[in-house]
Length: 288
Image (cartoon, rainbow, N blue to C red; front, side, top):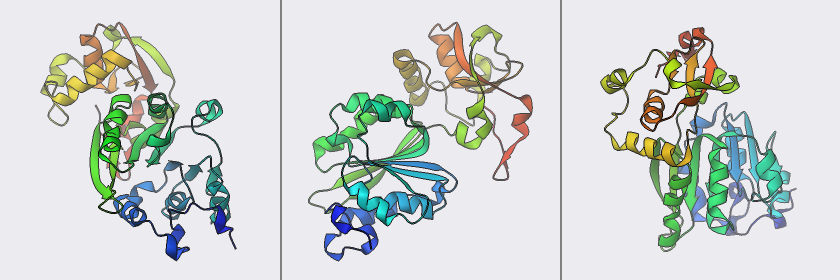
């Protein structure tokens, strides 16, 4: 029988503690798209008793890791039902930031307000999140504004407000933030080496081609201007994807933004030309 004394008093691990039910637990569980966790790697920062790590594994996650510096991690380990991993470590420690791998999905639920250096943490987190971030603020309007801090330090394609959690008098606020899904849709990309390629050597794309695109966002859109401003301030964070002949595969908007900003060489991943014939979940890969 797990030692439940090591669990936090604010959560209810799968109904084990009937007198400790936090309303936001049920709200959170209903807001998260668990179907999207199948075959993904998951990191829960500030995992408490590990409920969401166990849920991730239950829904087919390839790997699920919970991190918390408090002793509640002891109870989380005792409640583990399979291959869940629980690390008792400070997420602001140099060791954790140095050795933590990247994860497809990261959860940061009511944690940011407790960190000493939020901006340094978020800069680090930008390199850890591959695809999706579930982010929840603590209650109160000042904390609700933390989502703007998140968006300032991590570039997302989109952020979706999921709604309030907990009791109406003290609502927390939940978002799902998504990055481009290139590595998720094309697994071979993540293993391709990064090299710097002169812009004038890249073929298969030009400004007119990007301007004619109708399947993605316009270069006159706020989204492109935001991308360009982010690259200006923080550099290219996602390499452009090229085929072996330096023909464009993905990243036309990054290419154009870099060209307009005066870049000479840009970071690129070089993939085998045949990759574009691959299908993911039965659907053909979309280029650019």
